[in-house]
Image (cartoon, rainbow, N blue to C red; front, top):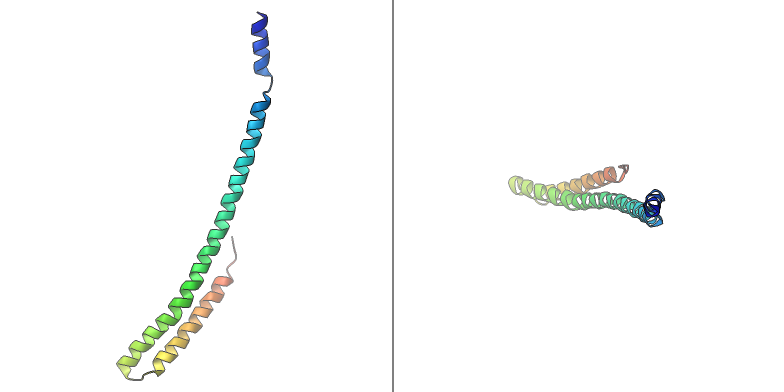
Length: 105
C-alpha cells in the first residue's frame, strides 16, 4: 500500500529530466527557425545577384545581335550594331538600377 502511494506521488512530481529535455527542444526549434530565416534572406540576395548578372549579359548581347542583323539587312555596317549595343547597355543599367532599388521583404 505504501508502495502504491509513493508511486502515485512520483507521477505527480515534475521530472527534472523532462523539463531539461523540453528546454533543449525549445532551444533547438528556435535555432532552426533562425537558420531558416537566414537562408531565406540569403536566397533572395542570390536571386537578385543572378538577375543583375543576367541583365549585364543579355542587354549588350541582345543589342549587339539585333544591331548586327539590321546592319546585314540594311547594309549600314557597323553603325546600327554600335547604336544597338549602346542602347542594350543603357537598358541593362536601367534595369539594374530598378533591381537595386527593390526593398527587401
